[in-house]
Length: 287
Image (cartoon, rainbow, N blue to C red; front, side, top):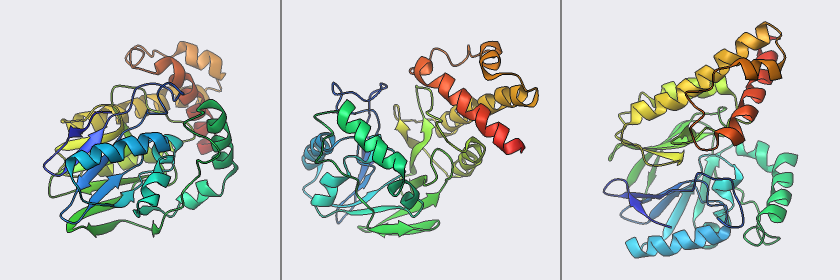
C-alpha cells in the first residue's frame, strides 16, 4: 500500500483495477484522507478491516493526530468494509441518509454473506456493517478540524446515497464512484441519467485534482469527468436505440461498436452487464 500526496493536506491510496479476491484483500477501491490542524478526516474506508488497519499504519507515518471522521461517498462493499476499524478508533462516520436503504436491504445482507465466502479470511464473521453516526439530508458545509469540507448530494446516480466531498482551500474533489479512471465504470443498478446530471454538477467546482473512487489521481479534472460522462452517454444512446426499436438485447449488444472502450481494464467483466442493466432501465423510463 502506497500513499500518494494529493495537495498540502491530502493523501490517497489507489486500489487495484481488479475484482476483489483473497489475493488482493479486496483492495480494489481508493480511499483518501486530509490532515487538518486537529485530526485526520478520512474519505471512505477500503474493502476489508485488514486493509483499513494497513492504512491506519501508513497514516501514522504522516501524522500523530487522531482519525476523527470518516466521510463515506457511498455504501458499496469495497468502500466500507474497513469502517469498523476507524469506528473502533473513535472516528465519527458521516454519510447520506439514503444509506438506510442499503443497510436495511437484502442486498447488503447477501453481499456480506457472499463476501464472507469469497473473500475469506479478510472478510469473515467478525466483519460487520457500520451505521453512520451523522446523517446528511442535503448539501452541507462541514467544518472539521478547522478545515471546510463541502459535502454535496450527487445521488441517486452510481448508488442512491452518492456523495462527493470538495476541499475548497486546496481545490481537491473526492468524487467517489461518480468518476472512474483507467477502467470501465461499474454501472450496476445505477440511475445513469441522474449520474450524468451529477457529473455536470461536479464540473462546476473549481477543481484542480480529483481523487476518483477507482483508478489513478486526476490532474485534469474536467477531462476525466467528461470521460466517465461520455461512456454513460454512449451506453444510454446505444441501448435507447435498441429499446425503442424493440431489438433484443443480445442482438443490440452485438451490433454496438464498443471499440473506443474495449481496451479499458475490466471491460470484459463489466461492460455487458452495464449495457444490459441500462437496457432494462431505459425500458422502465419509457413506460
